[in-house]
Length: 89
Image (cartoon, rainbow, N blue to C red; front, side):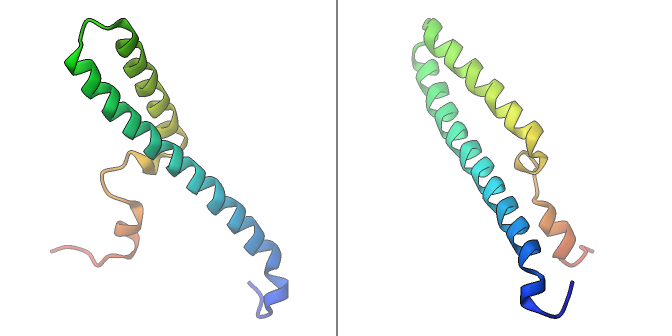
């Protein structure tokens, strides 16, 4: 890290590209969770429907794939809490 802003511009660009990718992944994850919630409700109302069963299975598979790309998406607690929060006890 240098002391001049113009020396750090390349690092800032890389970080901004990383942020955009993480936001895209989080947005897609949220959209799929909402679609899965709605599909599971519809499937609960009509358990005979093969279409809804296939839709739920497909969305669950997509969700698992996204969770494998970004493990923090499926974590119970965000890693930021353990990094910056004071220890308990």
